[in-house]
Amino acid sequence: MAASQRVMVAMTEGPFYPAARWRAQWSDWDADLTRVAHAGPGAVAGGEHLALLLQIVDSNGRRIDGAEVEIWQCDALAAYRHPSVRAPAGAFDPAFQGFGSARVNADGEVRFRTIRPVPYPGRTPHIHVKLRHPTFGELTSQLFVAGEPGNARDFLWRQLDAGEQATLAMQLDPASGDSLRWSCRHALVVPA
Ligand SMILES: [Fe+2]
Image (cartoon, rainbow, N blue to C red; front, top):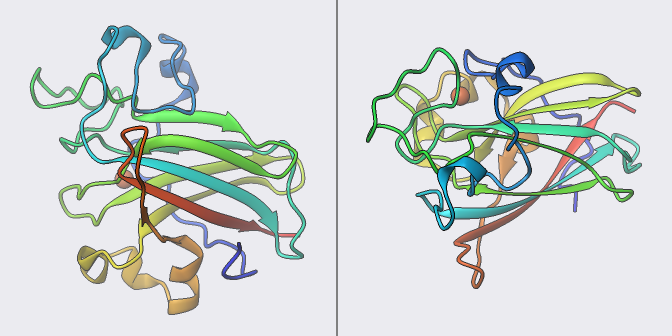
C-alpha cells in the first residue's frame, strides 16, 4: 500500500489543535467525525463523507502496532472546533466533530470516518494528523488531497519537494454505499 517508504514530512500543528484539557469537557472524540453524540439523534455532518484508512508503518515496512492517531480539520463551513473559534450559529456545523482520536490495530491500521477537507481561508484543503508511539515519540503533519488545484498556491505545500508531497498526498477514490462519497487508504511512514 505504501507508495513510498520515505518518512512522512513533519509539518506545523497550526493554531487549531484542541488541547486535551479543553476536549475533556465533552466525551465524543471517537473515529467517526461525521456524528456527534450531543448534536442529537440523526444529525449528520455536512460535506462529502470520506472513509479514511490510515496505516502506520516504519521505513523498513514494519507495521506499527498500537500507535495513537489524532486527526482534526475544519467543518464544511470552514470552522474549526477550538476554544479560540467562536463561530455564531449557522456559521459552523454542530454535527461535525472536528477532532477524532483512535488507536491502530495489530496491522497498524485505523479507520476514520470524516469529510473530504474543504478550503480554509488562505489554505488548500487539508487534514491535520498527530501520531504517538513509544518507538518514535510524537509526529505531527498535515494530509493533503492529491490533485487539488489549490495545492499549488498553498504556502506549506509549496515548501515541499515532490517526494515530500507524495508522503502527505491522499489519493481519494469515489465510494458507494453507506452514504460515503470518498474512500482513501494512505500509509504514514514513521522513522524505523
Ligand atoms: Fe489547518
